[in-house]
Image (tube, rainbow, N blue to C red; front, side, top):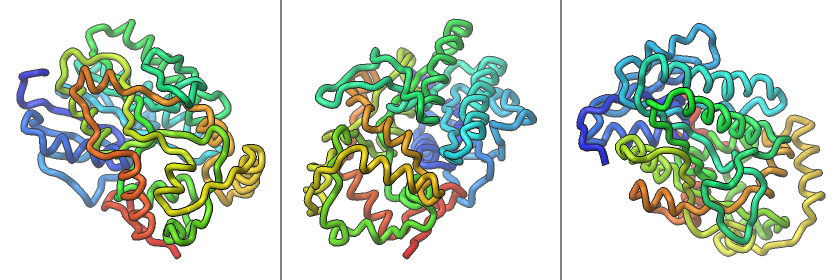
Length: 343
């Protein structure tokens, strides 16, 4: 671990699900002198030792190198999930914007870059065993989210070759949830008007059991702790998987909710999602559904061994907290995280 005290850390996408947790943990860290949060809109919420700058990384006019000047680390979290019907728009923010961040890190001579990759960057993999960080990261090409995450993995390959002086860390977390993210994630994936109270267990007598629908989850605060540790761990380089146990499938979720799993064909569920997406009733695309069915299970042993990281929440505790947030309109005082109870 680094013994230096007084680190200055810049966080992009600082007002979102992961950003708010990262900013809070850094602000509580005595080894961190200051935090600069970058977001398109400065929030009403803040934390100690934190200053805010309104910056759109998708804009050619954003002087990111100036914002990064004097920083000891940049944690890059900024990401746009929508509009899913316009992949060129998300490409401009997620890929071109990220490339601007990487170039600005080099121009400002920031020694550490921690980048938010994802389980979505991985190529299709097994559901019955866990893979480590050597699994290929070519994504699922039909899904914009996976395509963009995978492209940035290749971009960072080149960046690391050209800038060996920068210590680059790539975090590959599972699906991230917390109580405060419930309203934001309902809007992103379920739609603005999907009633949160529908998450009540008594209204879910059965759950669809779709072949391949087995995923991993993690509390956002646990992911944020891994980012914090990566800043301070001088030997940390390369990718780290982040996930909590147990893996989530229809059986685990049905037991959690007191529901009954009902086997449904993959094609029937996909057709329903595709129809709703095509009518703009559902923001989440059928291509993302295809990708989720193919995501591998991840082994997080490297993060535990090299970062000393350990999740505090089980995956089932994460889902319970998130469902409570859905019912109660969980949120925060930032533009992406505004809480809103619908229905």
